Image 1 (cartoon, one colour):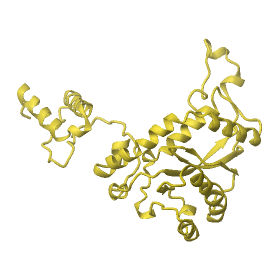
Image 2 (cartoon, helix red, strand yellow):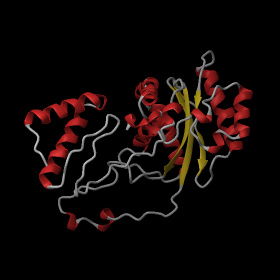
Image 3 (tube, one colour):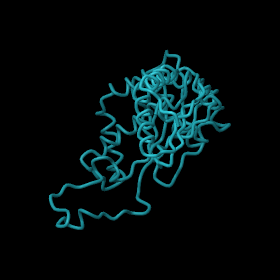
Image 4 (spheres, one colour):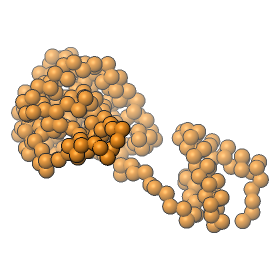
Length: 286
């Protein structure tokens, strides 16, 4: 294989960076560093001349770990082209204790061998009690929470009566009475059933159409990050609930004391993120 001169190598790097500048300098640097390492490690490694629409591929025996990203359909770039909503709703499960939370999943010891077994090993209940929490959020606050015991999902009847009529409508009337809003639920079947869509129409809620609601792109929905913030506060310091009632009270207390500034920032950048995903690809949000 013909060896490239230093100038030719520089020209290739510059050309590649110009074509993929939207991915940043680090993308180009990492790619060509990988090329160089593979070229040194294998005589059969070679750089192919690549079309404008392709990222260069490398012929090498080196095995690398593949980063896993959500499977995103190209049609979702069109699905994301709607105005950012003022209201989002979602459900999330809260167990009595959360050992998997960062900071709660380990222990400190200067001698692991002498650490008691009760510290090193913890039993885990197969079907641990937990509660499902539903709420809606906007830039101005959140609705009342709806608590559902573990093992019971939300069907369209429960969603209409307990979530939409009992909590979402009062929330809108209290904080957004004169606003034009767009409600953005997730793609749960109960959120888009025939009865639920009839309820939206009856009440006059402008909802994101199902065919325009992007799936498998949680990075576009600020409420997904909201749950992470809330759970970090609920289980802070490896806190554990002794009962479901204690857990629910803790959740409501953390909601009342939450600094809403971070949520407001996430909601304000929602439009920008959706435009970015629509113009390019939802993968830019990863």
